[in-house]
Image 1 (cartoon, rainbow, N blue to C red):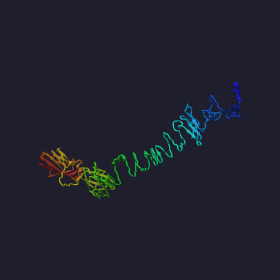
Image 2: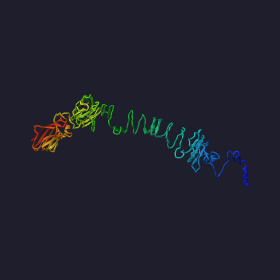
Image 3: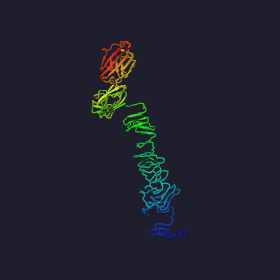
Image 4: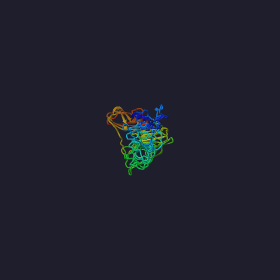
Length: 567
């Protein structure tokens, strides 16, 4: 009976109705608007198809079919924008932590919130259908509230295609930082700025580190600002500037460096210590006077090179020239000298130099090479280079002569390009040129205990007077007169050398009858006093042999020899 009643209900138009013209069926609907129009809930163990237009179904399926039948019934689409007109809370069940939608864009009406519950994720465009940028929407829009935002993969930051706008009165806060690959522009910055700032900085900056290029106006901080590098055309400081290291400072006023100042590069420059000590490597040039010390002590060095000291000057050593001459030229006939000896553009003066002293000749003659030589004036001759720096130096060259202790008594200076330009250099000892004695004169002596036997050397570098306490041996002994550099070098042409040898004797068969110079017998003419060469010696006591040597040419000598016997 009940089954018949239920079947009879199918004839009730309020329960089931049909629209034969449009092939539509309504359930609990008398005017079906779709193929199947159900006014109420539909319950089934399963649904087939995408179900994209079903409302109240948790899964939206693949989308909306293009048509109800045919091939279009299995081809789907999803609208680009999901419009939300009222506040929605995304809170998936405890069985999952992710909610999603196929819609590419989400549009919130004004004053509408989309809230993602704590610990949950909401993923738009789950199918990844979007291939274009975001379509601009009109209206003010609502808000999306969530604890955090990530990119689609959930591993990085979200991409803000058109940037982010922070309203006035609020800020971007957090324990992390803001990393901007491009430029960050703001009306102002509050807090620490770490990194490089490029562009103009105006206003007050506190707690900045890094490097800044551009114009910086009003950089202030409390208590101070730590700046690694300052790059710019100029910087002006009205207060105290404290720094660890500084390069290229142009200061108007006093610069105070507590630990000292170091300038220059390796091998040149110098250091000024915090205690005031100055160490300079190289040449220091000052346009005006240099003063040092304090009242009553110290001194002054003028721009002309004159030095004046108040007090005692103590030095562990002094390496300096005692005389400096500036050389000019009078045509091609004369050098002119200006300097010590009251010389003022004096032509080819005769100079007197002292062995063991240093002299400087500043050649400013305009192109006349200046040579110190052993050859007489009138030709380039033979250069004397011992102790000479920059010999043959031309215009602009300083020729330095550190006179050796074994320098010859006469040298010459000569222009190697013009024979008429030259003069004489007399070399003497600290007692002066020549000999003037008031009182007792004492001469040094060279003494030996090795007998002259057949031959013996008289080295005048050790003195001109020689004594041998051993008895003379041999019949016809030869004495060789020499020096460390050689007599031919030590003695100039037209100079005279006197040498005396005193030797003990104990047999008349021992005597000297021959003299050589520098080990050579050639070029020597010997004249014995009395006209005869000695043929015997004294039997006891000492015999004296004296030699007056006249140099008449290179390795050419006349010797006047004399023997004096005491027994």
